[in-house]
Image (cartoon, rainbow, N blue to C red):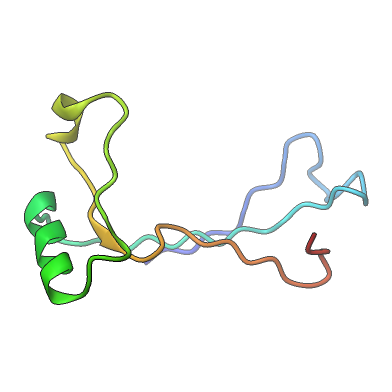
Amino acid sequence: MTTEPAPRHPAHPEGDADPAHPSVAVRVEETGLPPHEPLQLYTALRERCCDDGVHLPANLAGPLQDRGGAVAGHDRIAGLQVHEPYPVP
């Protein structure tokens, strides 16, 4: 797992120039996993867990592109949390 601080925007290296539109720090986590056959993993997740929330996103470039790699998962793919002092609309 790697965690890196979000880089500052080149136009605002010292921080937020516009207080009405503050920057938001982002933490990225990456977890390496051994290769799996995506369709087998998708099927196993559905059988073991449940039908709801299991996903196998398709590549918009088409099925030939999916042969190089695909992702199967359960529940959310990504999450975003906004904490104080940033306003939540």
